[in-house]
Length: 497
Image (cartoon, rainbow, N blue to C red):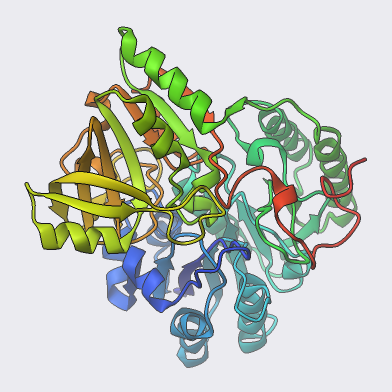
């Protein structure tokens, strides 16, 4: 008999310190597909939905696809957005004929306006609608702040194993593959066990291109391979820019009736995470020191651009993406063939549109969200080199084939620096965000962008060097600037030990 499976995606990573709420428009502006448009839009991309679809097609499942949507990280998700998308998934569950299973793509760090866990709420309400028989499988981002109680309602919980996240489709396949096994072998049912160490995050956000996360992932796989009843072991690095009770890293173990073994594995890995809390991290420079390095780079001959990554103003961490400290330092130093972006400033885009392509304008650029985080507006004279609609299709390893939008955009030239300004806060993790606005990062001498780690997936192959920068943005690793009130205490690093 054909299995009926509900497939949904509702993803957001919430920075509770960000004052810019995430509303319905934020999801629709980035990408939002509903009903019959979901699979045509995402079914052949590097996205969890495509991984779900790969297995579903092979098994001949009847899929119900109410919505697949994602918004750039930012402030809490509004109730209106929740009802537009979360409630749409719940309504589909209520209205569908008997469902055998659910495949759900979540982030794992969604926080609603009232401070509640949006991901846990969605899974809990789905379970209440569907009863105990339907199997619920959930995929999460590696930066999930996973509440262990989600495992009371979701049978299968698996997460990305890479950062940059280049295994989204594979994670979808993994979850759907486990689901396939559950549908084929009743009454045996998978269960997930979750454990958390008393930490807020792992070193460097759990980047998987170097230790300690590289070693932790290898150890997790070794432990999983030792026991046939262990189906999956996932490590989450947590998301530290959220003042929530469920904050921090976690280990989730999917097992077949092997709770004791799963608990041993989870406890072993939690201890290993804790022991790595003081691991060395890549150097992070001030804007002034980074600009000095850029000046030296411009004076030499290099194969590829120097990439300056402002990790503190990364919209992928919910920062405002309009910090100006690094741009100011580069302008002060001077030089040409420098690209900067993407800077979030809708007012500046409107001003550029009014001036028109090929014309000069004077404007206050950036720094409008909160000058305390990365500097205030810069008074500049700029040439409008290009105006665009901000739409592009990702061409790099992360999200390849996914269409997204940075909103109406303007490429400005200020002295020797080209600055991409966007209407939506959008992480410049893909080359196409610049190329769609008439500039090729690979042809520049210096590229200064706002990203923590994801940029490496597309930029590492073209860069002659990478320098990390802290301009004082909202996502600065200096967590002592933020006031946490709801996290459980003691917790590292707020309570060093």
